[in-house]
Image (tube, rainbow, N blue to C red; front, top):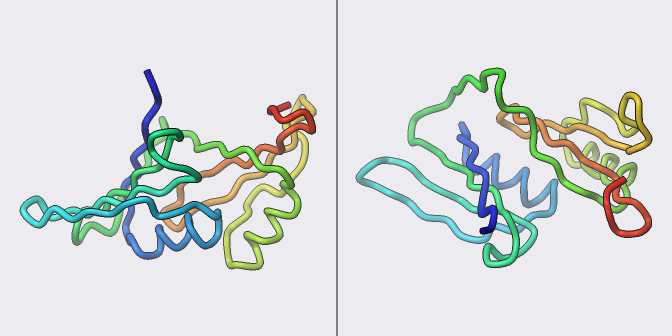
Length: 133
């Protein structure tokens, strides 16, 4: 088995694609439209869908608001230089709402950013040996 993707409903597909590709550095892997059911899908990620889990951005035409509820937490991304990445995100207009620093009660360095739809993304500093702390 393989985890394929996580789907997020978005209120503006172009803004969402720009955030994930231009600010977080993912690639737009594919995009498709369903005219009959009025939705567009865009898949973004750091590698091919064959080898990596990706994010499916779903835009339901004309729908501009969603309630996130309180069950969804966040998406986590491992990064090599959390302080540098957060500076780049801020310089590109991204929302770093929890600056890099150790997680409460631990040593792992984390930060949180918010995408244009309000979804939380946790950045986790990778350890020097290639894994997460």
